[in-house]
Image 1 (spheres, rainbow, N blue to C red):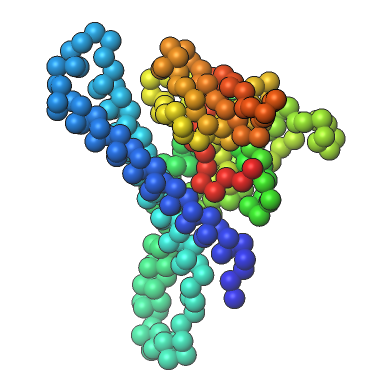
Image 2 (cartoon, helix red, strand yellow):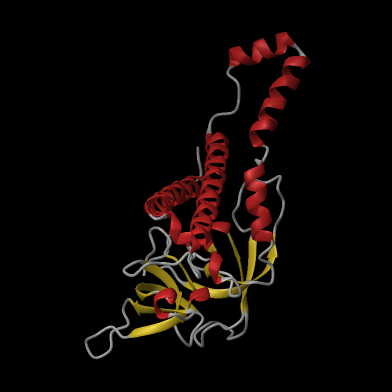
Length: 278
């Protein structure tokens, strides 16, 4: 009989697969818009300061990363499902296996080991996460079944690079350097989290390669003066403001009957996770 954590892991990865496919659709729409623009006015790329080709390149990079992530999650799902399927042969198969001798046993063992082998795309994802060591990231520190999701800015201090294990749970060890006053002990706290609980921040020194969230888009952003992230709506983009900050309205941030608009650096804003609870 399957254990509930196994099923929960499968459901979590199916949600992640849905999220990745939706993001891919959004990126493809933007790519098609850029294609139409360049086909209609190809001379625009020759104008000083035009960033059309740079934007198109970044969109293709994003599409490639999303596609690779989809392959990674699909591979993990296949492995998880395979681990839940009955693996033992029936009585008739066992008799046949014995009759066919050790050669057949070795062939069967080789097939099973091939199924369990981690794909190159999973290894690539593991390498990408391993490179985050020492970096600040957004992390969900609450359990999957918690009533609300809590996201904080933490530092990655260790990553389990064991590529023999396709289970991506508890791989990332992070440090909450500034826990809240209500935290037990009041000191720094570490967590061991799955890769799905980690969202890398955009590179501070390379805004040109960062996806820009358009007005009206829901995001997850660091609330000014804190290390906590909350759901917010984009009011204005860094490009439109000619700065490195978004103008955002945070949910549940009402003051005098209205939502104040707050500025947040672009490198403290990430995509809102699918199914976020706040």
